[in-house]
Amino acid sequence: MEAPAPGASPDADDGEARRRLDAYTYLSAPERLEHVAIMRVFCGTLLADLAVPDVMARLHEAGGPGAGLDADILTDRLEKLVQWGNLLRSSHTVKASSISEYQRSRSRYQLSKLGERIQRDADGVLAEADAAREVSNELLALVERGLRELAELVTAPGGIEPQGGLERVSTLFVQFAEFADSVRDFYAYLGQVLARYDLDSAEYQGFKELLLDYVEAITEDVAFRAPRISGALDTLWPHLPGLLARLDAHAQGLAGLSPQGDGRPETRIQRSRGRELADWEGLRGWFSDTDGHGSQVDQLRDATLRALQSLLANAKRMLRSATGEMSRRRDLLRLARWFDEAAPQDAHDIAVAAFGLYGARHLGIPPATDEVVPAATSWWTGPVVEVPVALRERGSRAPRGRTSSAEDHSAQKQRLREAARQRAADRAAAADELRSASGRFTEVRLTSAALGLLLELLATALGNAQLRRRAGPDGERATEFDLDAAHSEDAELGIRLTVRRTAGTRCVLHSADGDLLLEDLELDVGRTSATADGEAEVSVS
Image (tube, rainbow, N blue to C red; front, side):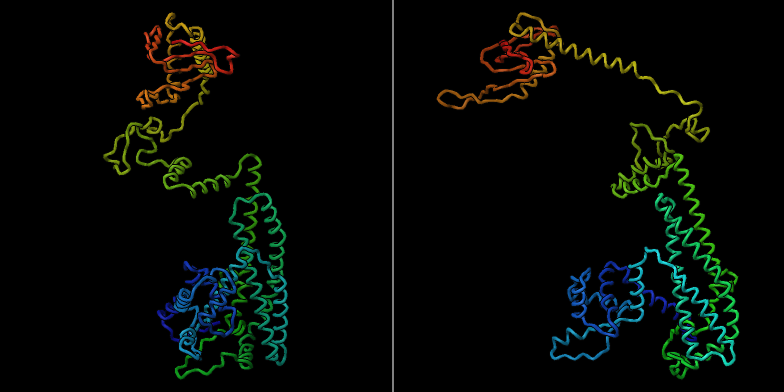
């Protein structure tokens, strides 16, 4: 562990904590991918300082986000990493044969201890964050055996040989640290799975096997070995201060650095695990309740019970889904996708349609259709909206009593079909009347339906007409036009109308609604080409 400096003030501790937390800034900066690539270049070296050209060459060789950085941008990235505490400026002497070489090589950087630690942890998170890590259960048996043997050697006459004790303590804490880390990682993954309520059948089956087989084996092994480890620690505990003192006398390591005159060490030391009493207290607290808050073994057992309860909750959900109570997870995901893809105004409309979140200004009752109330209108000055009696008296708009049966519209549909059939018959009769009256329009009197159909065909024909400029005498351009191939037809009625322009002709159409005079127009009424069967069109002028 790292020993704090004696007599340090709280403000100094806060400043040191802030400095260390600043070293994580590059992981959340907008250029974090480039920063990570640069840090990986430095983490791939040991006690080496690199200049900007060296870093640029290695980034280009590795590829990835930092491969396209030029010297100026890369220098800016390196300076920011120095500012955050991830890199240090190198103090090595620069040997250069020219001024240009000196300018390129004078800015050299090396990795700081804090920066190396943070980048190593970040690479571990990026590589294995979502994976289920196996619990190193076999290490627990080695921890138990190592503690038992250490307790026997310490309590034996003459005590333990210092070098052998140092090796056993170091091995013991390395094994325990690996086991504890694997347990934390596995149960963190288990908690991520527990957070999912809507597991499908395949995921549920895998989750069930994970809990009933793997987790059960872990908890049983820990529950079996925890009392034995606690017993070995109880035997070893009275002899522990003497053992640690003996190990320090044999090999002090970095702790043997000479102190300064004021009693503070020259360098803060982070000792190997197992060399401090606090490490042994943490080991004992993992297997025994030493502070009244429960041991890690108890927490492990409680976490397993919560996982089983979550498994039962998913089992109940799947049983309910078999009876028709299906999960709405897929519908909610689709709704979330609509919200993500919609424009702001469309998102408001979707929210209103999905959740009924109408404006509270009118208690969910829309105002009159011809009354537009601006959104900025106050409740006090806004128009009054009529509240239904049910909502005013009972606070609910839900209808009471028996629901009325659906209205039968069969008679109305029958009337509409008869009206459509009559209109079709009238138009067919009008078409027959026009064809029979063709060539003698001046002698017959058309009905209103026949005249209406003729005018409808005439308007369509004139709209489709192709105009042709009439040539004047001596090739002069005239101001009049002739109709060329102006016609219209109704394939359903089997009638066709062709209009031609003929100077001096007059066509009078008599009908019940009055007479219609067409000057300089000639009408040809007949059947369509599909129904003519060789019939000749009749011309009337």
